[in-house]
Image (cartoon, rainbow, N blue to C red; front, side):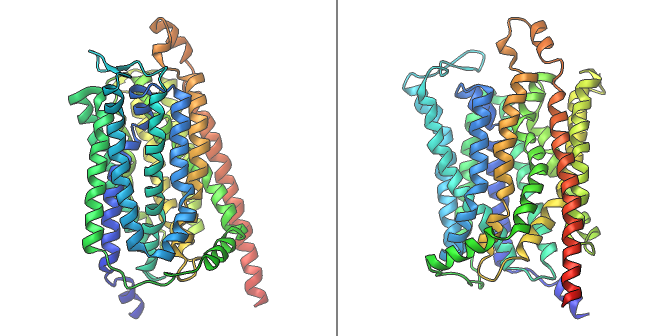
Length: 461
């Protein structure tokens, strides 16, 4: 009875405030990120490979820097870290909105009658976006470690899985809401929506800043005031943990496929299914499914180990990519008002989202349970290293594959020439299905080996 009451105990106010601002931050981030490659190409004139490299480095930096930001957040405290993070995010997102206006006022860009920007392909002014993205990257890196670290601090070992299930549900409510904004905005103001979505993101970040300032207080302050020597020692401990490093590398395979929701999907569906396609709504299938099922799946797998749950999710991800490939193989026919391209993309994303439900909350739980008191920020920041690797490689591969199999129609003299060039666009998804399959097999072997090692240790003790 005692265990049941502890499991159902109320979470602290700090837990709920942290989750609320995570929702706001995800609204901001995904509203911008779902169209970032389109913003870079359509508004600023970068080609597919350039846009993918910039987006990949941006996304990668968001997940590499938490290793260091998390350690520093442990030192200065989570409240100060969140105030710093949301201040930088507010400035950064507003800056993305301002950059095109500055370039237009400087005469470096013109806005055409067909709602297309022109004239930036030869201008270095477009690179002004790089330092602005860097500001967002630094702010976001603190959020990655601090919010998930707050969940670790504000929960116990018994209710931690439920705490991360709630956290991940809030993440996806924010992701769903943020992505919902872009398509109606695009209907009203055309491609200028790729600019104005940044002001929406800036406003959400400002609201989060005010919520933290007035409402966030935590009683858990272990680790604050550490010396640089102590930070370095903690960092060295975690990078010497071979098991955690190997798990990160394996799970990177899943996230490389998941990243295609942003690296490949927006351009793929618009080019293959037509300009009327709605990538924002299609991408929203992912967070919708996660919100609906993550709590149920977490409860379903409650008596199973974290690695067992992650294994099930990894097995689903190659299926996801193959479903998407099937859309183009069936031909872009319209069935019940929706093209095969769009329909199979949606089905693939459903499988991908279910995989996330099995993987992400338990993955964070697994890492949090390895973290010593006062080092939650460091360990949870380090857990995001897989997203750094998947962003760099996932976006890089996406740019190459889009150029090879699903190029920009504007590069061709006629529609027939473009159709011939994009006839095998579905090959893109075969590559990612292979990556997902290799990762799933690797994790199965990893789980078998680590269980065997742990059993031998138990026998010896």
